[in-house]
Image: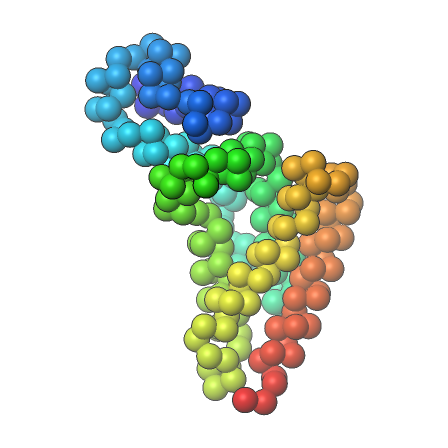
Length: 200
């Protein structure tokens, strides 16, 4: 399909050359289409980048996301989620995309907006928060607390392994990543359970 060809070319260019160096003209030339054909499908470069992000996120998304949230204790569910999150965050394309965003978002506000609109992190936070809210008693937990906790869980799981995978330290081995998922979940749950039991 023409749409896939454009996205294939755009993905390669964005991840290799960066957002700033990738132009509509270059994408059109590499995809062997006219600019008119390009603009018939995408409003501008930011929209194209958003479509690239959406496709990468879709490819990294587990086939049965809902299935990750059922079966087992809360610790087992969160450990399973942590492993799935790490697999996605440390995928080579995900890392390359992260490099582009870090390098160029401050120069191109439309880039940050395109990513925010396609964020897989927000969906993960909402689902984890919903899981925590269902388990906690409404009397003990204010509505904003599960969202805050889910955000912290995601950061705890991803931050250091991602930094090391980006070159800020030695990349973690599969065995280290598995232990990281388990131990981070255990630490998070101890904090979460203490929080839900604390007096108001």
